[in-house]
Image 1 (cartoon, rainbow, N blue to C red):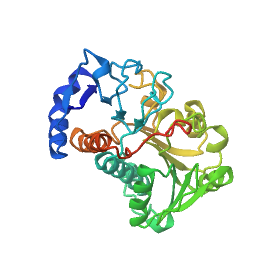
Image 2: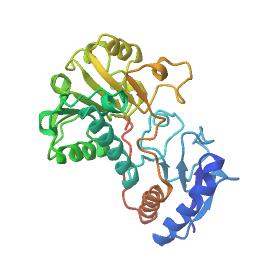
Image 3: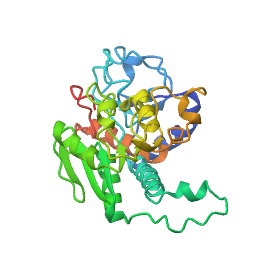
Image 4: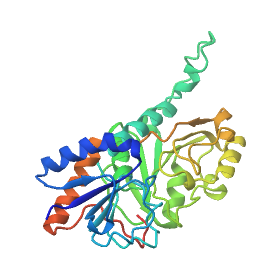
Length: 312
């Protein structure tokens, strides 16, 4: 029997994802029926899921073998009480490469203090303001999963001293790895540039708050392409105001789109980007989805299965 694959995303995404998914399924030698509406949910074998899509109740999908998330983050679905099927998060080369490029670009921007020159084209020669070399700069990364590890190793390859923290112990070449409460304090205490790439769970919500921000070296920079609620916005604004932080580059926010009247927009020490650091790209995401469907049809373990207890 041909498996039925339901694309449960926004209607305007269907014309973009449909050809990519069909091509990936064909390349994986899968004869599947791809649909964007299910008249009978009981006939659906796999759900390609967008958290902004139409499905909130998974209980009618009694034959569904897996829910395949289009996003790396799963906080908007993992606690859904109707979800009984295996949930797989998106881990693909396009997301990884996009995140590496975003983080490296903004680290170099702040490391070299490029804004000082770009924003001050005023005829003043500031040739004495030499930045340190990468080997003299410590970058901290909170979160050493697929994305955090890739970003850390890319920065280490440029010569930066990279210190990383994760909730469970890790051993990653080029990164001084730490875990646990004391490890978090140590990484924060060294991080002249801090990148947040943690999943959002009850344990990581507001992990950057008044206490932890105060551990950073004075004049540090925060870059957040992970999840908006990892940061207490009020504490961040206070740290920028009192000089504890030099700058914050933010790609994700507790409320998105960021409201027009939010103080981040007009703050001279905040850079706002519109959640573009790691965007799911249909072609590369479709290959990951097709591989998981292939595995499901052959009775093999799925890739990137979410641990419900941990929340990611």
